[in-house]
Amino acid sequence: MTQKIRTCLWFNGQAEAAVELYTSVFRDSRIIDVTRYGKEGPGEPGSVLTIEFEIAGKELIALNGGPEFTFTEAVSLSVDCEDQTEVDDLWAALTASGGQEGPCGWLKDRFGLSWQIVPRRLTELLGDADPAVAGRVTAAMMKMGRLEVATLEAAARGE
Image: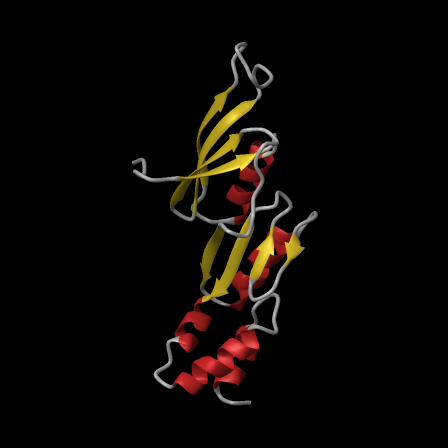
């Protein structure tokens, strides 16, 4: 079943490589459909125009639209991670081969797409009834690149 609203990601000739990475990194992922340029162009006939794909149960579209537009941090894909192992695995896979680590759980993959790799435990700690806990956790998070659950929990305890 197709989602009514899907995110479209604009690439400059790298849509196929990006989708291969994303579908290899996330469980419950697959390529749904590939549309190729015809002889009318504007791309090279037979090259990928769009790829409809699903990662972790969400449908997206990758478009080889050309060099006119690039990704910015104004849009990112946020991933709710079950535990530190998932955070570490995604962080390593998405920063590999030219990706860039950022602050507070943010990174850019090698295609320039921004991701937020967020352990579920962070959300739980920030929702603590004691505002001092959330404050300490936020302060600890602000000093991190890849988020570390043990450090966030220690901050919550005031350590």
